[in-house]
Length: 126
Image (cartoon, rainbow, N blue to C red):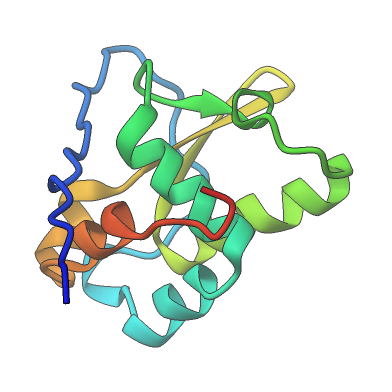
């Protein structure tokens, strides 16, 4: 029996720039619920979005188009809202565009190790 040891993925946490718009409504850290977070992450598309933000972020927050998802805008709006309402991501409105990033510090404080599991997850397509 052979075992393959994969390197632990490194979660990117970029500093918050100054002058950002206010975040859209989201639960406070103390109101984050494990069942809501796990429910939102149970969808493979949303899990992939969070993993991509954790591992591949090029800037502090990203618009929907950055993810390269071939889905209707209404479907993507639903998925990104589900992540925000569960408390996984923080979204800000920049004119007509919403950008997202993972609430790493908040989730690590409330559910230590959860984001490490998400980052280590390997999608079936890889």
